[in-house]
Length: 192
Ligand code: IMP
Image 1: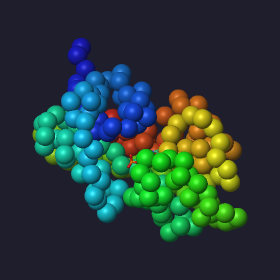
Image 2: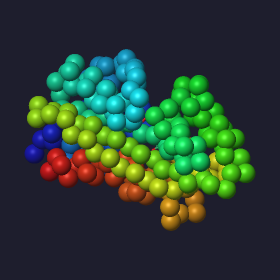
Image 3: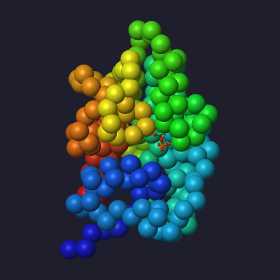
Image 4: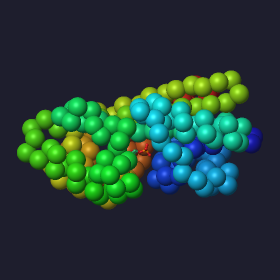
C-alpha cells in the first residue's frame, strides 16, 4: 500500500528527524526541501498558536498539499512564561541555541523556582480545514547544561520524573515522552 503524503512545514532538520521517526510507518513525510521551498517563513505571530498556523497556512496556500507545522516554546514559571513565543530568538541572536541557554541560566541564577514546560502547538491543514493539536511536557530547568542528544533547550530541561536532561535521554525515549510526540500522537489519532 502506498503511504499517504503529508508535508511537515519546517526547515529544522532535528524536528524533521523526530517527526519522521514517529510518523514514517504510516506516512510519507515530505520536507520543505522535498517541495523545493527554501525560504524562511516569518514567524510574525504573537503566540505559539499563531506561528504554528502561519507556517502551515503558508505551505498549504502555496502547494495545496496536506501539511502540518509545529511551533514550540519553553515556558518558565519564574520568568512569567518567557521565553515562550520568543524561544528561538530569546537572546536576540537568532539560531544561537547556546546563547539562549546561557541567558536562561543567567536569569535563573540561584533561583529556587525552576519549574518550566515545553509546549508544542501543531496545526494541520487539508481540504477539510484546520485542526490544532497541543502537547505539553512539564519539568524544570537544570542548574547546568548537560548531554549531547537533541537540540535547542534540551541540555537544560529535566522532564518531571527524570533526574537527567532531555539531552541525556535516549532520543527514542524523548520521542515517546516529548511535547512534540504528544501533539503528534493526537494528530495521528485524528488522521486514523
Ligand atoms: P520553533 O518551534 O522552531 O520556533 O522553536 C522555538 C525554539 O524552541 C528554538 O530555539 C528551538 O530550538 C526550541 N525547541 C523547539 N523544540 C525543542 C525541543 O524539542 N527541545 C528543545 N528545544 C526546542
